[in-house]
Amino acid sequence: MDEERPDNLEKPEILAPDELEAASVVARSFIRSVLGSIGWGIKFAGSAIVDLCLPRSCADCQKIGTLPQKSWCGPCWEKIGRIDPPLCPGCGRPFGDAPSSPDHLCGDCIERSFRFDSARSAAIHEGAVRTRVHQFKFGGQLKWTPCLVELLEAAYTAWELPAPDLIVPVPLHLKRLSERGFNQAGVLARELGRKIKTPVSACALVRKNQTLPQTRLKRGERLQNVKGAFEVSDKSTVRGRRILLIDDVFTTGTTLSECAKILKRKGGASEVYALTVTRALPD
Image (cartoon, rainbow, N blue to C red; front, side):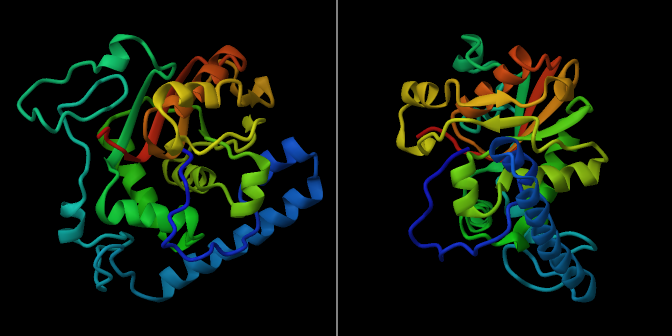
């Protein structure tokens, strides 16, 4: 999901592109892709070595002593606004204001507004998780990757999503990829794929049009903003496959829906499910 960079964050580091395969599809630059991949890999490997050599601190309170290979201590994990029933079985919108009601379709899903088969998110876009998403995404702080991927993996397991044949991240346009240095959805997708032992394709879907940040726009404008913005680079990669689409934040679902539409209509994907770290609730 496209957001504007918060003003209170430090300027992002200049990092080698993570979404190198996507960049190569768009820019046709094999050398740039390979070099970028090596650079990102070294940076992430360095972070992993630090985790192995030093005790991991909690992603919220920063105290040492989290569970083995976990990024959150028990009390902070319990504080996270994780999404639980009741919710919409289609898009995963939680109904926290009606905790005793059964699961039921929201208005968007009744109107069949979305093209994905279903969507789920790990937590509400608030508090420590929201802060870590912003620091990771806009501040280039890849050290928060493990704590966000743990949330994705927990949601994937809890919601019993159908086992995917392929994981695909929501792509960035080449210009924004160059400015940011990496695609946050691509980083999350690769690490989740490693954990659930599922192949990831960073180049199956590309963003051919540079769009405005979705947070600036009303719902109707968001639909027009992303319409025609994506394309499938290689139909054989997704044809007949069940796809798990990954992004950092679900706001209105328009970006995820447009990606799902293109993966199905142009790429021939059999099913597309969406999974995000957080879900932004309407005001």
